[in-house]
Image (cartoon, rainbow, N blue to C red; front, side, top):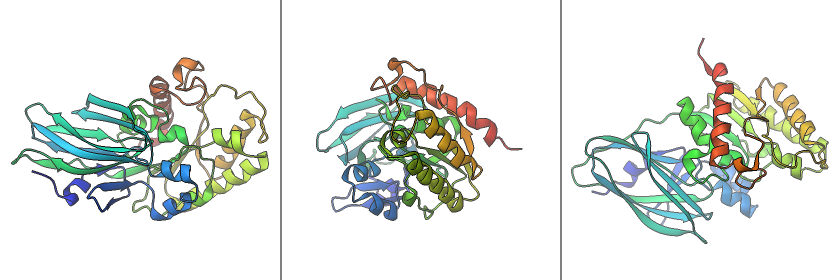
Length: 325
């Protein structure tokens, strides 16, 4: 039995919309059409904006097996994780030059199980033809978006080997919140990417930029202008949301002086802009150990172990602000 496109679309979490292409694949979009148009003039940024961080397939089934077709575009890192009843049971880690297509087949234990398939964070995975034995049931697991994550490559997930280990996925899973991740690798504070027409009102918004602003911006004034306007727009767009400002983590070479100033001065600019709109500021400088073994590139992007530390630190810092009175 092959699920209909509507039935398959109902299983997709983490996307604002789902589009069917001419070949019958379902394309999850975590960005609005307006946001995709904003990124389209910049090829790399657009490709990253089309990727599927925090997007997953989530359902309950009594099937003893299932298969699904996938297609990878807009990226080369094809990383998938499959969880059954909360346990990681399968991982695919591959690099596909120019994308590719394939079919995954999975055997499941006897009984009824919760199944979650995490999609790649630096490539776009489109899905089609979810197939189960005739007579099996497939029921969507509940999904209600609660969090909106904004940021750069680290929030997008770069460069974890397991998509389920990105800090964004782990943090949301630890908190028990559903999320839409609109981070784009390589980005700085760009106020024009903010769009309030998401189809839901986030209860929590996290903003995590700064490392690229430190490296790329031409002056402290540029960082100040961008960050100040960004936080102003986020607060105006989501006035009821609990807003968290996540300051940049430690990185090797942070002691260098850049045109934008020192790393610490850029972090202070961000803090000031965030506090001006009432955001809760989280200082993450010591969340990831200051050792190259915790970074994929030995200097900037956490690896899976580094992300575990990062997510744990954020969880502990955020939780007191999220507890109900």
